[in-house]
Length: 64
Image (cartoon, rainbow, N blue to C red; front, side, top):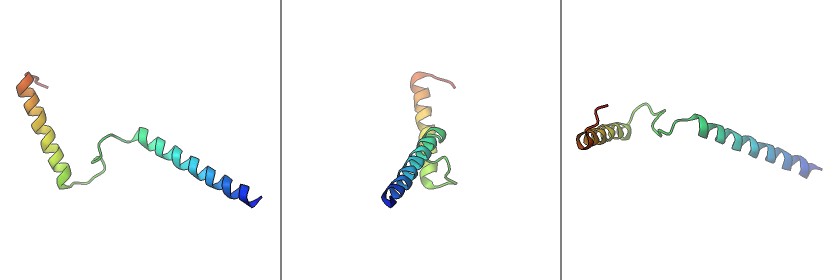
């Protein structure tokens, strides 16, 4: 009987954790630096994005 109780508790915990992770996957943004306050990697990614957008605009003439 105790084995069923322990198994049930573990199963409920596993389902709850999986549900929470699925919820987080759909509600968070794709940006890994979204919640970061600031670091050199985030600054570098912003500069790189601006550089790439500038090069694309020069190459294809997009003015957004």
